[in-house]
Length: 441
Ligand code: UGA
Image 1 (cartoon, protein in one colour):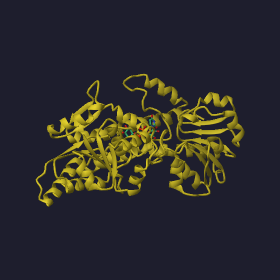
Image 2 (cartoon, rainbow, N blue to C red):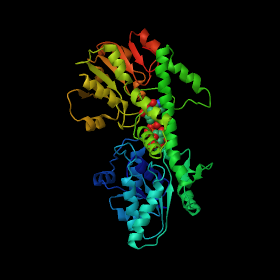
Image 3 (cartoon, protein in one colour):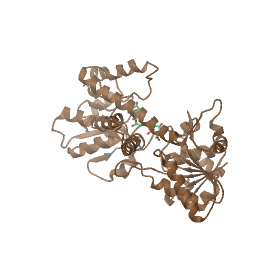
Image 4 (cartoon, rainbow, N blue to C red):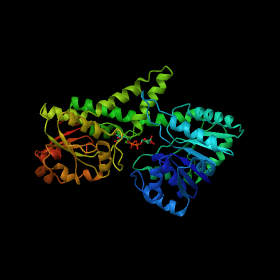
């Protein structure tokens, strides 16, 4: 099938590459000329395992194209994905200007029926807005063309995006026109083998499903972080508690890892956007507000441990930091807890020596050159002359470090661990002072 994807961000690019891989003819459109040119040369703007070879292979095979020309894009696909960003505006609501701009463009250039799919995470009611914008544009053109608007939220995880997209757990489709379902079945047929993963519903329910899923997951994390804080005060170990409750299948082991707060481009933004949606219609979403508050507080947890340990004596200290990305297998630092930590340490007059397997250039891009941030080439180099090690991301190769070397390299054997990577008793036995989340110090 001929498909067009507007927006070559995370969701758009992965979706386009995966659709091309199964044989569809996919045209990607973006207004960013640099990005489009880079992609044509095989330079992928994001780090995502497996994505670069997939893009390259399908681009070379001729079933994945990149353009800045919106008209070409609209002409290409009978199915038009809107996968542009919905950044938070000043009050935290999702800003729909990019989504509606694409909708207008599609209506401006279409000369036959189109199925328009909202893939971006958009508030309930957005499909209605897309429809209104398109109808107004077509009216202005004096056209009588028909179109369908479908809500088809994306559930991929960064770091596992290609695999998630290739083998989706569910394909949620919200539509008010059953005639749109057949082409969508054909589109997703290669991803829908063995058992039917399609969940059909009305548009508003599909739009809310996306927010409900992310808010549920964020709630699990904030709940665990609150339990971790309680465990600390009560002298319990949250890691034991986690296993104790996870064994109940109604609770499950997934997404109950306490830590230094959730980050990324989705949970913080989506929780906030649903809060704003609720408030706009006069509903106080108390649970969601608490989820957000607990998370904002949790991002200060490591800095609090550090202040608890050093008192006011932080000026001039050097902290080794392992992990800048908001989670492993990505270079994304959006809303990462490492940023709250670094910014607090800098305010207190400390220097950070950071290492991350993928996010070094992203840190450089965000913070530029500054004397109190040293980006180090290896995790061992980051330890050199540091007063303590702080861990913000659970990269696999942080899990079994050379503790003897660490002891020799650090000024003192002191670790603040925001991801509970180590067994406290083993570290105590080796002479370390070890702070972790919900495990006592
Ligand atoms: C999240 C959802 O998991 C995806 O299903 C969804 O499609 C995506 O948002 C989206 O809306 O686009 P993502 O932001 O890539 O995916 O990352 P997650 O793996 O969900 O992690 C989010 C944050 O939660 C990370 O900072 C992670 O460290 C933290 N987390 C996760 C915990 O603190 N504890 C856990 O048990 C799990």
